[in-house]
Image (cartoon, rainbow, N blue to C red; front, side):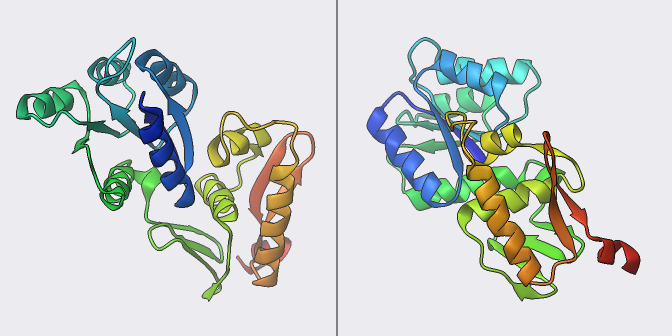
Length: 230
């Protein structure tokens, strides 16, 4: 999942960013309300963690603007202001949940997972394509009932392909959703990780493979053997 953390306190933002990345999330950080709004316009996020007391534009304003535009990304407001009127104002502005500082990181993770599950069909707990089954809550992948060991990035790559089966996925989309917006687009990191993922799927006897579409990107598609079994 890709998460936007909007927090002007660098120490707090760094703590949240590091913790989320260790859990396998892709994280962008904005330090003020205007930057947050711009990033939410440019990139697609699964969850936004939004502080209220921000420079240039506060969290209430950011949430209201995104909701007026019809953006439905789940918003979790993070703030030291836990008065009832602030909670009400935040929820009325469009926030989906509210967490007062200081908080335990385990609770933050639980709330992020809960908000992500509310995202509809795209947040289905189980993804399937042919012989590949992914349990997004338990963070496991099985092929023909055999669990395969994937790194965090390999899991995120496969998750993105399972969300877009048989579609051609561009490298730029993978860099944005699986890595982050600052990653060098000239890097071969995508090809390296896809190569490793292909090998693991093949070793597990998957009847699906990730094809390279020359000059465009990649696509998860059934092999000839899988098609013949239909």
